[in-house]
Length: 415
Ligand code: ATP
Ligand code: MG
Image 1 (cartoon, protein in one colour):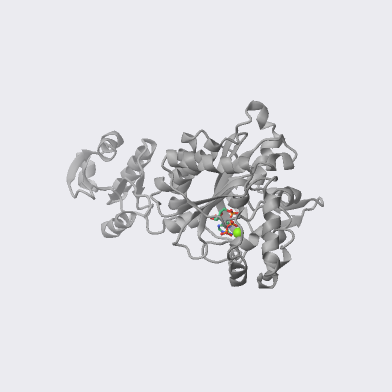
Image 2 (image 1 turned 45 degrees about the vertical axis):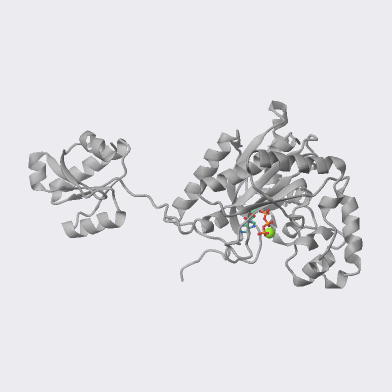
């Protein structure tokens, strides 16, 4: 019996992969306009890295991590997200010595043991970006603007930007207590998860989808009302800079995010087109994370985009590539000539196809059709003798004779 892949782990096949390449190339191009450089970190990290950064009482650490003990008795985890690993690398390589303001982006697979469904997988891919070393609200506005710029470049204007502030270690505990007292009388309405984390992570009830939690949190106090003057000022300034550059947003005061390290500005890009998998990107500030991980006391901010969800939003668009030319050949000698011209043209930068087995002209033309090549060239005995052959422009329908050499042909098909 044939062996299949693992549930929740997907193959990305030709035909679809062109869309992925387009998404990745767009991210590289846009992020580099904003001064970001790529960083590549390993898939495997010490388990402790994620426990300490993401937080013990989060869904990811409690139940979603692919963790195991390796042959050397080390506790390791396949990364469930990118920020902690990028900050680990930032600290380990003392990148702040070169410049405390690092602007980094990454792309690659992440792993979470979740229930697979449309837009939710066990191996999924993120494209993310991080900025260290600046707490100025201009950076918040720039990171958000870069994120929406990336989506606009893909022709996706629909996901809307929602922002909130989660305050800081000064004002959040005050809010937490206020929320806990509000929820105390309604605690039996909370779902099992939210009930259990009432002490450790009560804020999660605010964005919990269960009807009981939604009922219990109706009319709950909002973090925004509890921000300390510094956090309130930071949030106001972030909004002002977003407006200054025309980045539109909505305030969602119930957004809490599922990772403990977030402070101040948090955000999601939300779509109405993917059912309950509505977040296509998310992120926020993490001003305490770098020092919590043993690094310098530097602030940070970043986001991660869910590539599978972006690909789903682009489902209707065709990214398949077309070869420049298909060469059909009749007879052994013409076939050899076609092979030679193809090779020379490829070296000149043209994408060329032939029928390797040199079947009938009819079946070769069927193949040319399948490839949707932009041009076709037909070589037979007469053409070989003349040294020229008809080159047909498949889009324009026009046809002209060209000399049977790569330099002459490339001028027409790439000209
Ligand atoms: P969700 O609320 O959908 O579970 P999340 O808050 O867990 O998302 P983050 O950890 O912030 O997500 O990750 C950022 C983005 O990565 C998400 O907005 C989403 O687009 C994508 N993402 C997260 N988990 C998955 C998954 N299991 N499969 C596919 N994409 C995912
Ligand atoms: Mg999740």
